[in-house]
Image (cartoon, rainbow, N blue to C red; front, side, top):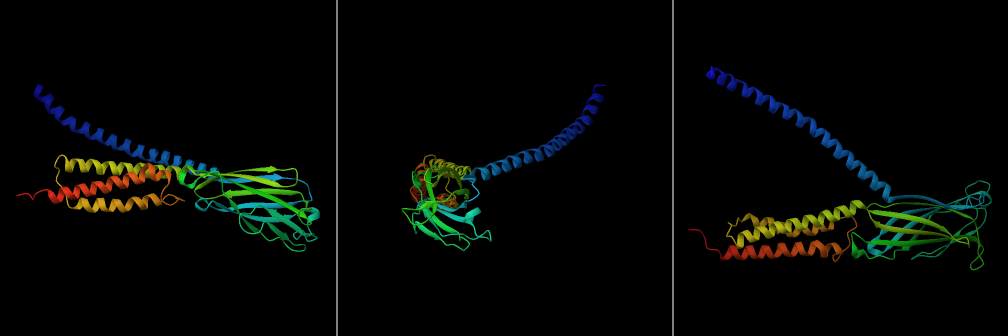
Length: 303
């Protein structure tokens, strides 16, 4: 009787195990798409947050019917040169426009705080105002603080009739658009009493850029510590040295600079991130290569 039970048990156990394995496979096949969907949704949410953080659409100035509408579009920001390029487009409204509704009714003068190029620009009557580009200076930050640097820029606009200093300002309405890849831009329009419009820009690195830079630094440190542990195993504990290790370590020495320069808008060598990770990782790997090479040369051949 006991023998019969054992026979039955031996016959049932494999069936139960097969069903358990099949159940686990089903659960795994069901879990994988769910996890993948959650991760994909999370990634898309991060992307949309990133896009929203680095895009600015701002309106300010007057709402009078007789005015000059100006659209200030931030084209590029070169933090390494501390410059920001803004394109200004003009649309006359009301009494400032001719009968056709698109050309200027009278001559106007644009005064702008350009870092390079003329600060006084003519807007001729009877013509469609041509867009003009203004280069602004960045201040208040240091590019070497990458990826945690923060900068500011100021745009001052005055449009009027006559000649400075007796310029008669005209009402202005201003729209600001900014969206530069790899950067997060914030803006604020500040109207002044004399008809001048002031725009204060704040520029920082985007979260994607900061995250990539931090991931790069963590990767460099991780690889450098792995190489250091391997070197200790070879030098102190006599672990066998494979000839292919030199190819791997040599490739790593050249890969670190490429990895360091892969971050969007990375400044030249000498940033905060370099002192936190790149210089250390490169030095550790280089010294480990030398130590392993010396041990390899001095270690006697196996008999």
